[in-house]
Length: 123
Image (cartoon, rainbow, N blue to C red):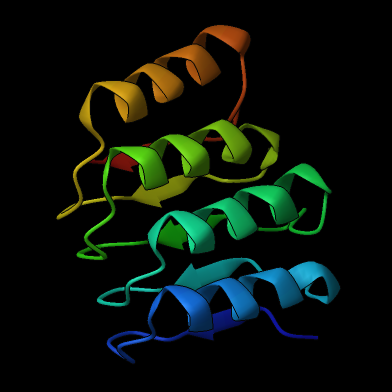
């Protein structure tokens, strides 16, 4: 079973990332997802969030989106959906722009007790 998916610097665009992330429903053992330097955009983040909300990523512990140029809309969609990723302990969003909406989504998730395993957050 696939446990780590490392797509560091593959220059995947929003369409490619969305297609990939929509297909992760069958990756129930995936614990590490590295998308550093790709460009998932709002659509890719929404697909990742939807997968988490469907329970398709129960083992996901590390999500690295460093330098993906995510804007406020993409970050908000991602953070709202990741609240269902109960095993997530490392979330790396350095080099993105979560803005007020993304930070508010993160704060709301924390207040609801979502992301109980989160130990490392880098913005």
